[in-house]
Amino acid sequence: MYNAVIEVPFGKVGIRIADGVLKQILYLPEQTPELAPDSALAKRAVKQIESYLAHAVSPFDLPIETVGTAFQQRVWQAISEIPCGTVLTYGQVARRIGSAPRAVGQACGANYFPLLIPCHRVVSSSGIGGFSNHDGDGYFRSIKRWLLAHEGVSYT
Image (tube, rainbow, N blue to C red; front, top):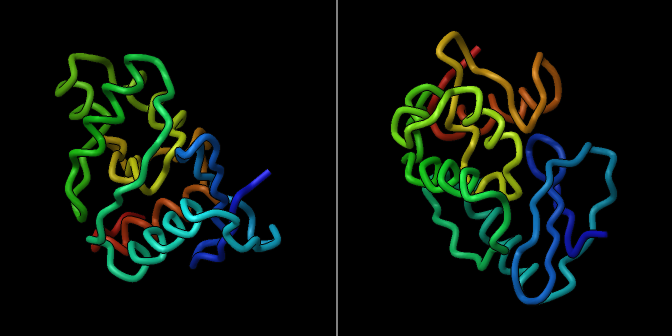
């Protein structure tokens, strides 16, 4: 099911690879068993994720599968351009691409490559907002808070 599962400060991260490209990165519960990388690309992905977790400004350079609708890809491209330590609201991203905030939020939730495409840098105009298609406080919002704090941004 996964090509690697690594422990991270907020739980586990699962990595899926096929046909020489990254297919998906998933946030997993802490009780998920770790799994050593089973390929060179999985090892490279693990190394880059660990580098980011040690130094938030570390870049990612991994081949990723082209997925999602044309609209989702536009949103993900806009989000990928948000610098580390910076946040934009769903509305600000929407204005940049000529869309609506709710649609941007839905595209964020459909992100196959969290960390690489940093949807955690997109927040609500009234607070932190949801994360990974999850609203309300809980595991996923705590991940978003951790990632933002790691990048020097504080949200309650």
